[in-house]
Length: 440
View 1 (cartoon, one colour):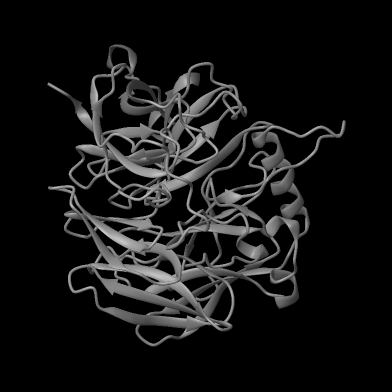
View 2: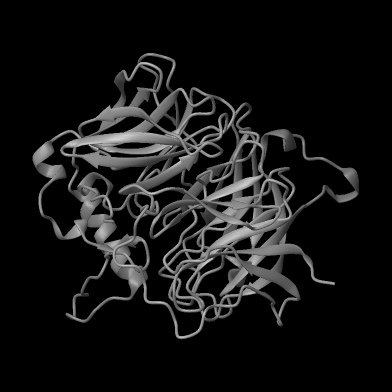
């Protein structure tokens, strides 16, 4: 089975696992452990996948059934379900395509395949394993589905000749489920992975390729354009609770773009609303996600880049903000929030990444703590100011053997008791989970 090819419009799009990875990494001489207690943290870690090359979804994509009983993962053969109570792995579907997400209303896993020049979105019922066609379209890429599963959201380059040109940026490194970002510096020597990625992102941004965001009605198949620009449009995310609220980003080097935006899809000619405004040079914001209740957009904020780190929140209804300070070692490629909104998690990072953390290769459970007014005395305009706080980070998993070119993409299970992540710590890519409570 082969991976779906992705055009230039989505060459750097959110890395979603293919139903079949080509080629799957070779299995190590010995099978990775099924379960162990991390000797450095005291937390129990379990391997959920059986086959090398298996993968969970990107950190802000839903892989769980609405009832919270099953997780869907991609394997080299297709899609499989993990029973979260028993950890039993069961095959779900084998098709040549790419895993998209699991619906928040129905027990359906969505994936996309190519039939000639037509792209077909399909859904498989997680219980009956019956597959149905959801939508057909000719070009572009689907990135999100809304809360009631009536709208798919996607992006497309408006010029077919640009989308399909054989550009080097189309290349993907299947080992790490990312674009191949390799680049040379002014001295002709290879740049680090992190620096090369910035170069390639900037090249794509400066090309100013016309793009459109669109939605497809899953009931009628009707497709309509909701926003057009020469900005690099990416990271579409519908609210998990409000069917007509869409978040998206302007992709590119974060210090150069205004990244975070919201758009109503039910209001003709609605203008995008900017979520975060830069206040200093080299300030960056990104890797955004909705809280489980849809009331808050959270994101990685750095003031400035690589020096001061925050998990920042924007209340959608009121515009109020909260910033929780993160120590350098606890900065993470991706953060996430628990279903009840009381905790955060982070997947750490290596020393070449933006934080240049000397000891950052860990998975973290993060406890936010607000900074109170002194003696209960409030500033006159305190209600209109950013609510500050700090994060107390607890180490869960030692990731020293993990190659961070594969992003772990941590996410909480629906019961809030485990973190699911993917890792190559034992050689091949597998899906794992760590228990938040310490082993007894």
